[in-house]
Length: 314
Image (cartoon, rainbow, N blue to C red; front, side, top):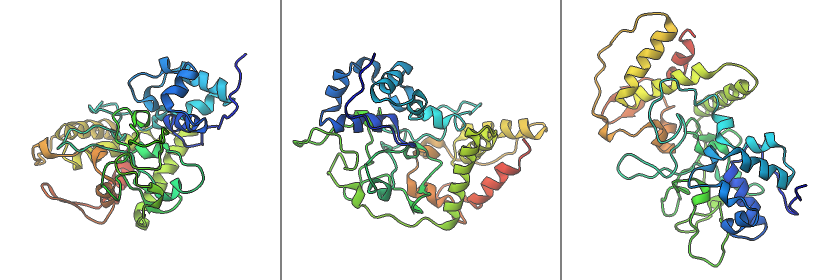
């Protein structure tokens, strides 16, 4: 029979697996690597993003040690949240799933993507990272009605931009050996002290609607096609040339009509940043009345994109 850990906090309802592991290790005032070695868990964590690719044996072991149900442990994986979002049948190539921010990676100009957080959420109670911190679909906090931040206000570094997620964070040179999720790894700024801008009401309403769709999907409602079509519309608007073909096939498939090639001019995609790679400010502006794009001109309102995705016959 497996002995329970003396200190065994349960994962928060919306917490990432890596965040939970870090909280467990910090509770014992141990470096994460030492904590994992002590529990013989190191062999189950390879050089990968455990929030996406954690093996089942790791979740089982953690549930046994902490008295957590296996269902709650599985909910810490992005797969449990992305099930509806990653049903992208056209398989657009990406270092991550559709809608997932590619933490620690970038294809353009050396920009490194990091997590997005709500400073006010971090300041309330015990600090932990939520699954929404890796989802490009969201750019504001529905609880506090403010925009998220994805860079340090002091040094402008991307937040915890390690290639393999939170577990790959390298602590700053300090006597404190613990991983401090609330502090910048570059300048040690406390994110809980960061300011937050109020989100426009239209943006907030749209984000809440997406949350509602995801929740309804968890209860059995089929919302996959909505997000699939919306993702390809966004891909097209952001200038990903391969997305144009994908959009045509999706619309043709669900409208019952033959595919029609419409000559839409586009620029070379060498300077194009995908929607998932765009920062919070850029994505939040997409919901304003006009989407300005320096190379491709003006597009219509972003809310109209959502209405278009909803109006396509499914």
